[in-house]
Amino acid sequence: MVSGLEVIAVIGENMRGRPGITGKLFSSLGDSNVNVLAIAQGSSERNISIVIESKHREVALNAIHFAFLGHGGQK
Picture 1 (spheres, rainbow, N blue to C red):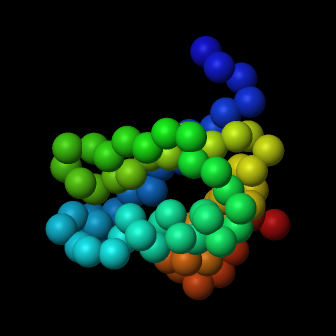
Picture 2: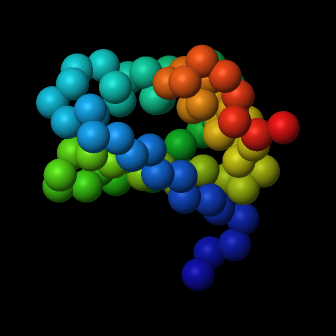
């Protein structure tokens, strides 16, 4: 077990075969200065998991929520 890291999973039925979803995810994180350490995608193409440093958790979640839902998730 490695401390100081977080796994965030982005899950959605409409991700499969839809161009631009991954780019939108990584652009939102990059624009927020969040470095992605590892990436995994499930075989169903319905989820993308990323590993980031724990200190960037709130910024990353807010960036992802804003990119896909139009608002921040954490307060």
